Length: 445
Image 1 (cartoon, one colour):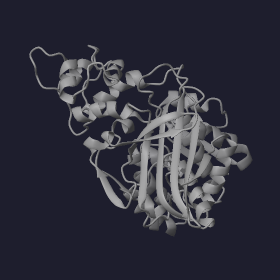
Image 2: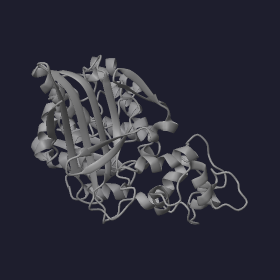
Image 3: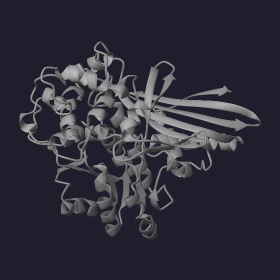
Image 4: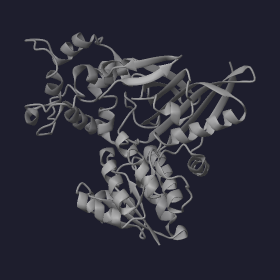
């Protein structure tokens, strides 16, 4: 009997565990879930008696290796920076590996060794990255089969609050790793190609250069560019394409408000702040503003960033409690860590909240002398604050990919992405059975 070991039982693993647990008896495998948080394990595994849940500190290499040794297939839902170490252990012990995270350059260096050992190291199998790749490849294959030539590709994805959730001017709460949200776009220039011209956006301009789009039945959205769209040109077989742009979706107004934190320096993670133990929300914001003997924090902020006093932007900042004399509640931290801690007080999902995952592709192509625009969108709503759309759309494709690997249904070996038909076709078909499907609108232009 084969053994599947899931390392990590965080926010995005509920659907992953449910799927693999329900297939356990039919497919004849053992399922182990390992995490250091006993409460998280209990919440996600208790209803599945056949799932073996284990509390362990996976930050310790020896502990990780002990559980990797027990597996035929390892599913790493640990923080992305840990995946190369997990992968190297899988290489030494000849174990297959599945992750939802981007395949780092370090991970890609293991390709030849994984091939030589006949191992599958399948990455980017969640929602973004993941379902975005799979749905894109299905569309591109169909267009090419009909003789079309793709001239422009744009894709956006984002998790936001569903309209049914209580009033929240940001229309956003955390449904995945909060640190990744706070650090989004930091650490390097954004790169894409637009109408044949390479474009670069430095971090301090990222949230000011946004795109707007509408999805029928769901309203307007805005999006900011992802870090590196260019690396997927060859992966998608789009060499020479004039436009390649991938981005993240939010509701209109989010990016302008988030830019306040960027311009202040509140998302900086490069140094630790002094005086955090005695800091309030208000003094945290004030620490980035010039001294003035009489002006209030609000007035200094409005002057510094040229924000009108009656703007919705100020209402959004006030809603977060940023000007309150409320203790931060940390003893130390970087600006980014302090900001994250403050945001978690208001952006943690409550029982009244439900989330929504939105994905949108727009592809222009020519066929038989005619130009076409194809828009493809997928919207998935969560069931509750615990059973989120984010967890559903991340966990399900990871689980389905894991099943394909465990059953020996993937022939290719090495460090892989889900762009091969043997991976994306069965997963997309099964996702549709679970209600995750795309609506397409084709227009002559």
